[in-house]
Amino acid sequence: MDGNGRWAELRGLPRLDGHAQGSVAVRNIVTGAREIGIEALTLYAFSVQNWSRPPDEVAGLMRILFDYLEQERPTLLDNGIKLQAIGEIDRLPSFVVERLRALEAETAHHTKMTLTLALSYGGREELIEAARSIARDVARGALEVDAIDEATVARYTFTHALPELDLIIRTSGELRLSNFLLWQAAYAEIVVTDVLWPDFGKRDLEAAIEAFGRRQRRFGKTGRQIVDES
Image 1 (tube, one colour):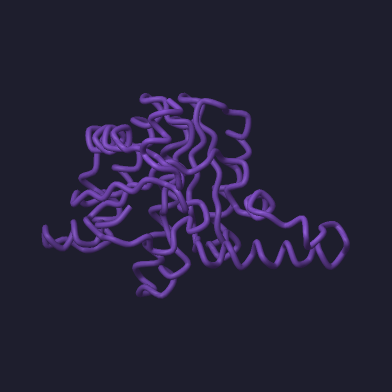
Image 2 (cartoon, rainbow, N blue to C red; image 1 turned 90 degrees about the vertical axis):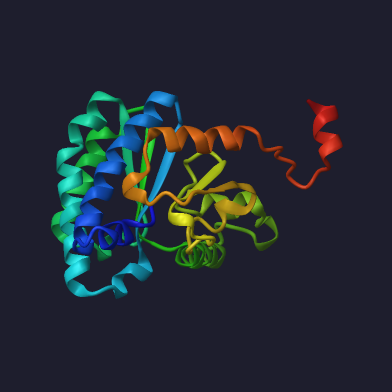
């Protein structure tokens, strides 16, 4: 969800105003995704690297996150949306963690859509943690080294309970993954839009999904093989 700061700067506003407007876009996209029938939506809300931003901006972001969790509770409950978070959650302020965990518990039984917030998250950091967990299980005899394969590693990722990642939408025209879901992105389709996140709406989401639908997903095969198998 990139472009909040630039959106504010273009309007002569403080960066936090852009982040606040970005939370409105989150509401619109979450409800829009639910209406479209998307099974799982993951939002990159705050990266591990974002901790290096100015302290006042980080503090403001944490307050915006808390307010979002407070204000969007009815939306999640009314739409049957399950909320979960991935990342180094223990680094977040306690008042945010308490509100987050409470809402996770309250929505745990919902099945209409899973909304995952990537908070204090990093793809490299996720892979490091997965490697450590695998090493610990090997050391205690719960896992054989020769049994480690792609499916094994996937079970140790933060997103192990989610479906395969199909589509990554990158707002604000940036052409990089920014340490987001590196393992999961191996065969995901990527759609880049110049729209800044606060301006990103349901029509933009639908356009990205339409672009995804026109892609031929080959997974290493040739185009002819895919046609013959269809």
